[in-house]
Image 1 (cartoon, one colour):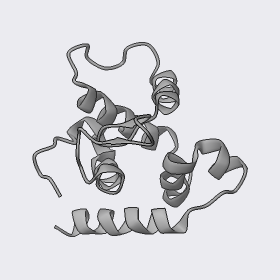
Image 2 (cartoon, rainbow, N blue to C red; image 1 turned 180 degrees about the horizontal axis):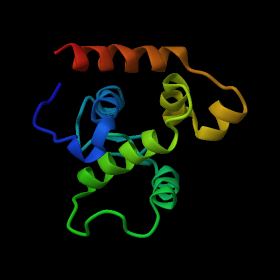
Image 3 (cartoon, rainbow, N blue to C red; image 1 turned 90 degrees about the horizontal axis):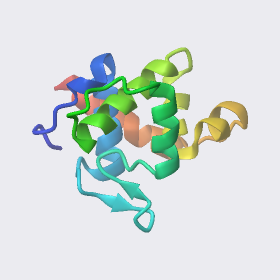
Amino acid sequence: MSTQIDYSGAGAWANHVRALAIIESGEDPAALGDDGQARGLLQIHPARFRDLMILAGPLPFGLAMTWQELDIALAGLYFEFYRAHPVDQVVMAWRLGVHGVMLAGETDAKYYGRWLYAYNEITRA
């Protein structure tokens, strides 16, 4: 696990976002997945990026941000936006989609278990 990446842009959700980065990419900012559709630390697909930018509203972040900084800030915003939901649902929705988890009841206990393990390792340190 890398300590070189600054997750402070996720605010109070920095540990939550870092745990996602650990299970999504092994904290590799250059990671590509899903046949090139997912990119970066958090393996964000274009549709997810669009949805996160809609949540964010008009240019809430600095124009000088790197893609990595923007992804981290958007992931923090995602956790903040869904803070009223149980964290397991929010984490699983990152992988399965908000509609699938919060409306259709889909789950991925293995994914959440991996996230929870990473989160506990981070917060135990």
